[in-house]
Length: 352
Image (cartoon, rainbow, N blue to C red; front, side, top):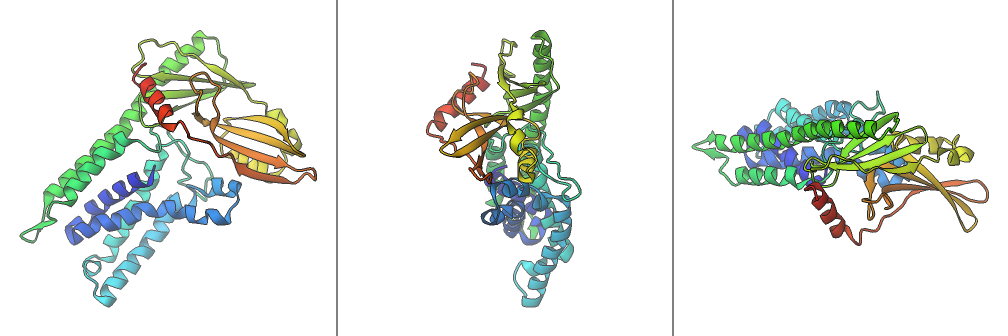
């Protein structure tokens, strides 16, 4: 999820774990804990694009990382508090600091699992990125109500007559419950639309190997279905508010055979692991270089998405020079009409 959402969730965890001990400071340190896993981006300047894609949401989003790092941070904060008698730090035990950082980091990873990219929560024992794909990476319907309740709790006094203000905990728990219910509704809606997609695939005689269903930006109403066949993919959209349940699918050829000259390259193989088998290939010449374009289908298209002719959100370029050397980059998309695109998606989500 986006940074603001993870800060909100982390602050809520901090309040629930430590609010009774350190008041408003609990939200601050909880927000810090909820931000730590995304600090993996600090390694990006030292990585090429393939390494960057594989590194993101791996070690620092894993259960192992939370287990190992939380006690270290717990010891550090407890040590600073007792040695220098720092206010608030000294009022928390080692185990409570450890709990704050452990749950702050772990809930960050759990929330990321609901998005599309994939989170390697069992890294390094498993390199698989788990993803339910039931909420978009930015969703104001998840974040804003949660944030309002958290701010409400924040501006209430933490203590009354030296006793913890339980209304703060109630508001935070209510925010956690409401946001969790939204995640649950995403899972439920995904199952509902899968029934519609499967009925359409059968009615349209599409013989498929597997399919992938994900929500679209900023909502859990409009869903995109990517269907893999032997030679290509079908892509279609359906909103839970649609009155007409007929899906219009658009077809894309795989063209995987175009990668034959470079398929044995280790870096190419690593890049192809990223889209988890949902990608198409295109080749073309640029000066003396041969270009391989790999489209990651999991995140849909930009302008033209309704007709299946838009650029894909995530596209990777492999350049083969005249000496056979390969270089890798991610294509930068232009979002000149981003607002119009969002309005189109939201309108479609409402069944238009």
